[in-house]
Amino acid sequence: MNERPIPPAALRDAASVEMLRVWVAEKQLHCSLKIGMYRDGVGIDEESAWGTILADAARHISRALHPEDAEAEEAALEKIRHRLNEELAAPTSDAKGRLL
Image 1 (tube, rainbow, N blue to C red):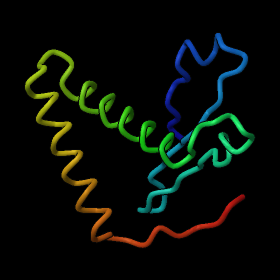
Image 2: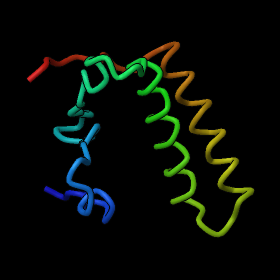
Image 3: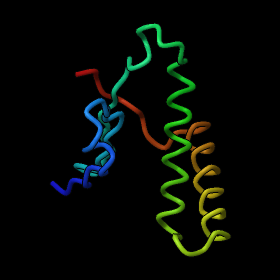
């Protein structure tokens, strides 16, 4: 398995929480999600929080793809946004699975 390194801030913070892991395995996408993080009356809407997490991930991806070129970074973010909207509107595969 080819795991990504844990960010230094997550290692330093004893209260850090892993929210999302994604793998491509057996030619399919597999995810592990931390659902319910905001259920215990913390005043944060879980769906909105996930929207922020996914938006931040998209920005990190576009920045990683084009670390030295702000214009290319913005174009990459727009391509990600466009494809995300297309995939949400007309999925190319079923999201199936179960809670573990």
